[in-house]
Every structure is written in structure tokens, then in C-alpha cells.
Amino acid sequence: MKKLILLLIAVGFIAAATKTSSANNTYILNDKNKACIEACNTCIASCKKVQAMHSKEKNTKMAECAKLCKECAASCADCVKAIKANNPKIKDKCLETATVCEKCATECDKFSNANCKKCATDCRTAAKHCREM
Image (tube, rainbow, N blue to C red; front, side):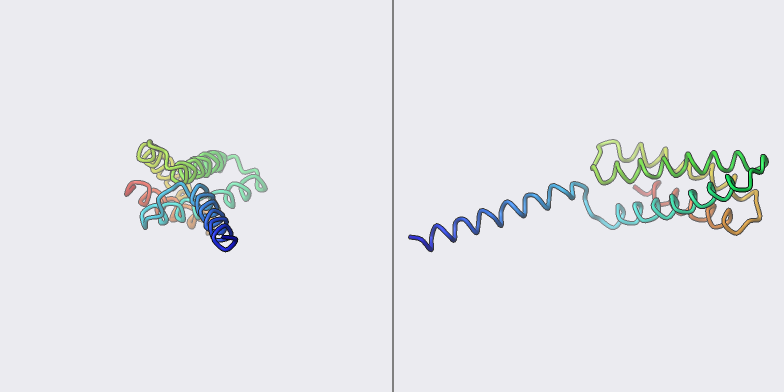
């Protein structure tokens, strides 16, 4: 009888642990979602790097680039949150993010700086993955 009770308790703990871990991963881990999250996170890092560079230089010609990089990073972060939350409006959020990423890429392309060029490439990659969602 004691063994049966211990077995039932163990099964209960395993079931509770499984339920808890699956609650933390509410988004569907398919290849499209993973690729979009990864591309958005890369874009966020590039945008933040360019934004920091522009704020140090205080070049007025680059003010629009810094502004768009800030918007792009925020939009990508929102997109990642929407995917992870399995938000029913993921497609709308991703399409909105793709548009912001393209604007940022176009602005970053105006500058010859290596960070800006990398940011433009990363923004276009994120936009591509967002459109595929």
C-alpha cells in the first residue's frame, strides 16, 4: 500500500512538473517561429549598436537613422513577445515589424559605416522572416 501511495505521489509530481514547464513555453516552436525570433533578436542587437554609435557621435545627419533604429528594435521586441505569447494577431504584428525593419534598412544604407551596413542587412533579414510568418 505504501509503495502504491509513493508511486501515485511521484506520478503527481511528474505531472505537475510537466504542466509547469509547458506553461512557460506557450508559443509553438516551429522552424518559422524560431527563425523569426532569431532574426528579430539579431536585428535588435544591430539596431541598438547603431543607435549607441549615433548617440556618441551626435551627428545631426544620422538623427533619423538613430530614431528608426530605436523604433525597429522596439518593434522587433514586440514581435518576439507576440510570437512567444502565441498572440492571435502574430501575422499583423509581424507585417508591421517588417515595414519598420525595411524603413530602418533603407535609412541605414545611406551611411557607409560598417555597423550601419550590417544593421541594414539584419533588418532586411528580420523583415523577410516576419513576412513569412
